[in-house]
Image 1 (spheres, rainbow, N blue to C red):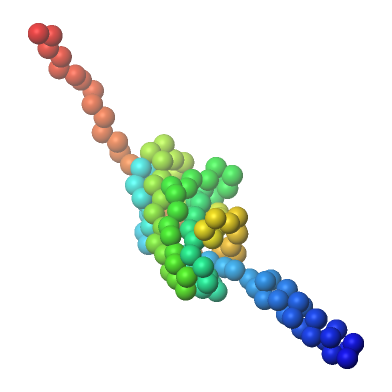
Image 2: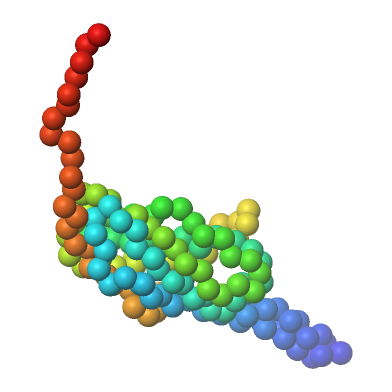
Length: 143
């Protein structure tokens, strides 16, 4: 009886531990490979395995050589069983030119702490210069 109880205990709790350790990952694909400063980059995120609860997906991008200078413009909601979301991030108007990449993808269940996901897929894109037109004169009339 003790052996059966121990075996049952190890199966229930050991198996639960192994299932909790399943790798969560995000496969990525940037829709545009070149993005102007001040414009949005669209990033398709495919989650694996599919979450069994709703939550939010956060995507952070940064210059390739400055991963700590990341940009995030909020999150995208995903429901239970959802596997694919499109995240949109606006690149700053004064962003560094050159290669940028996705540096972090996080899944955060509702009312719970987030989990950083293992990133696979195409993570880089090019930030190119945007020729900003700003006013140079102001016609003023005092009445």
